[in-house]
Figure 1 (cartoon, rainbow, N blue to C red):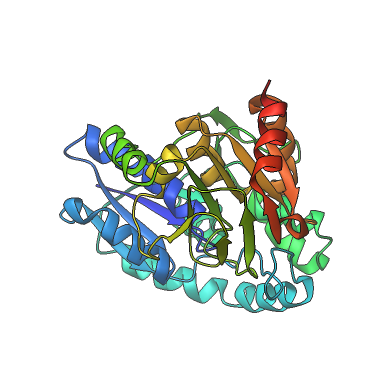
Figure 2: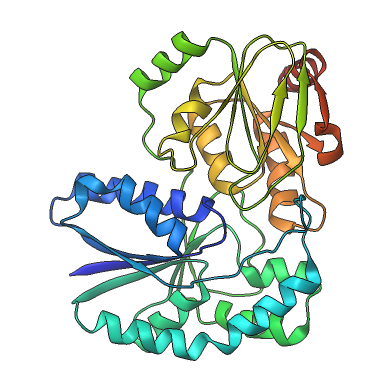
Length: 333
């Protein structure tokens, strides 16, 4: 019997936290089998990550989500383009669901989990399975906050109302608009290798991890007064005047180890990155994104609970390490 996971193909945060959940299940139960359904890039990543479990994991590429659409060279949301893409996506829901039902007929299906993919919710309902959502927010909450066309928000509200079980991560938004069975779960991270973390520290010394997620591209960031190493991910260009920059490969599988090895991280406030930093006990400086409800909510709570700091995107164009580190650790005292 296969457990099926429908994962948002918006960025990589949803797939990495789903991988963390499935990695645990695969490791603890030799009989556990699953099907992962997500976008092309997310499935490519999952295939590499689970190469040792290829006999128990089936991968399927499907358009599972739209998520948010950023303005060019920005983390700000392009509302007009987002509405266009969402209306097109919604018009395809029925066809995508029928294709999924046809595919799944070849397998004995157990529980279905959805990391906020509307397709997963609709497939669950079509299969007469309980709708299991595992998240800290839903797209209805985000799209309502952005004041998108009511034609869109009402479609997503209907999805929220058919959720049976809500597996709720920490730092979650307010879910008082629906009444599912709520199962609270903790922060989760892909496995952190103590050995790999120590090797990174020995090889690179003092380090900072900077990421805006793989779904965004920003102009260059210049860092001064830091003679250590800056680890960066795709979508962001960094110039470290006094030290080194190591751009991590696009297909790197263990950014969690680089987060754990770093003195602190500068990152978009996506739940997956924040959770991996929390699990690694790495201090955080989070990027403020105007108009994104989840990020604003997470930043407020992480500041309160873990002494993190935040910066506006404009402040990142030129960064003085000494000032940044002083502000961060002043907050943590």
